[in-house]
Image (cartoon, rainbow, N blue to C red; front, side, top):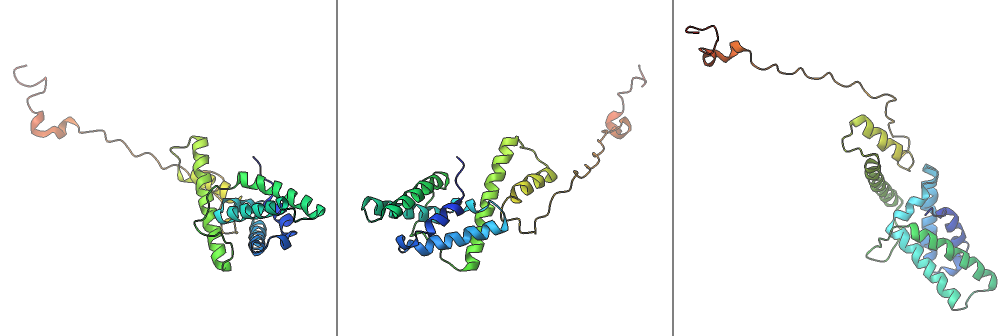
Amino acid sequence: MEPPKIIDTLRMVTALENLLGSLGPQINAMMSRALSLEKKRADSANLLLEDADAAAIIELTKEKLAGQVVAGLLTGTQEDAVKNCISKMNVLLQCATKKRPEGPPSLLGSSSDKEYKDREKLKSFLAESLARQLVIKGLSDIDDWELHKVVYSIAEKTALDDGSLCPPSTHPPPKPAPMPMDPGPTPSQYGYYNQGYSSSGPGM
């Protein structure tokens, strides 16, 4: 299932920040990370759905908003907006990781820590995508140039492409010349053990 753009959903949720309580800062932090990813690479913000903390926060936010609908705490206009948000978040959660953090989820950390975690999650995502591509292509025996092509084709679609990626060459490098085969020992190399077996020897 193709999920809605996470940034579009987060914009709708942040408009309801006054209903989110302590989850408000978490949603704002998620929005900031989504925009940062999108700035580095278009359409990469949905990679946040692979983050267990982000998925848990979306789920908690949905439950909090749903609880206010059930309790009748919202005006008619608010209820329509909240139900729309809940619907969007339900679709996101269907496409998100099912992993959840052991403790309370949080996206509030130092900027450098968040960037490091983002990059590590992207690397993990790349490794999983690469494994799937190799299985799909049936490439059990692949040379370095072909592997470089597959890795680059996946990495350039993510925020890992920060300008430091090295694209593969257009054509594969020439294959090394095959090693000459060993012709094996010649009769003269048999030495002593070859003596007496010649058809032209004495007595024949």
